[in-house]
Image (cartoon, rainbow, N blue to C red; front, side):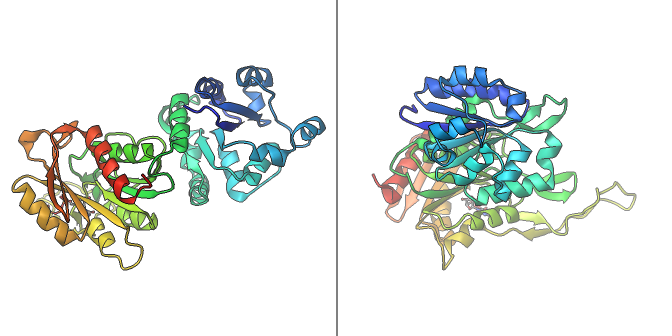
Length: 399
Ligand code: CTP
């Protein structure tokens, strides 16, 4: 529920602006007050009348409107809300934000606000992939701007790929997560998840069967308790949860870089199935069949992310949780792994083929701490996540 929450909704100029009308309805259904701001380009796609009718209040659009200024000055407008949502956030709006422009009402509000800002990007796939947009996105993320989407899919311009605006209910979920209060409010938690892909050449890679389901469920459960989750994920089957900060990587080396870049954190959960080896000297051209025989691959050891972060002299998270995927002698192997990796807790599970756990929806785990081993009954991965998040909250939370 969002009752009592005030959202300043900035609607940019893109074909996806029509989704913002439904977003206003959904936010208001949940009790939020929505003050709409329509950019000049936004007004090419939506009429002020339809926005105002759905929001149940007037639309602001002009920085130099004397009437508006007398009613509520733009600085005051930038501060009234609990959250500023920019949907759709066009490439142009993102660029203005990243540069700190203040040449119209929307950009001025974003610069003057002292409340969190969430952007919901929407643009053509090439515009999204362009180095300039990605550079702006990185700047905005490091400025603490929250992002939702974009999604992959068919686009109004006839192309396909990332750039499609998230659906209104996905934005609502992210807004709700932002306001969720719980024992982990104010805590920052790192979660790694999914497999890594280690390239052989530009078209082939080595991977594993991890779906990323357990890591995503843990991130969701921690966010539901109020944590700010930095979710570092390899190419997983399961989409990342809403309301978390997502960092997508491919290889173990990139995962280590992203994870260390996220520090300091109050806790770190390493649920990723990281490839232990990478192909040494991966080819930058596609390997071709040859009469001279089969290609020979040699391997190099990947960094152990859990071990590296557990042994940091500076910025070691106060609680480090590792996973142990084992196929035999689970307890013995996992107990030894806890010592070897230097983490505080190990969540051990049996991933032998008969269990159906790897890639499945259930998990049967044993939690190993310095107090001993605790068997949890077989349950859904979501339930394991909720139970683990609860235990983490007991240790680092304000409960
Ligand atoms: N892990 C990691 N970096 C690696 C390998 C593993 O961070 N390069 C983390 C995993 O995320 C997990 C834990 O270490 O939390 C154990 O992973 P697992 O695959 O079970 O162990 P391995 O290190 O591969 O050990 P072994 O080969 O002995 O099973």
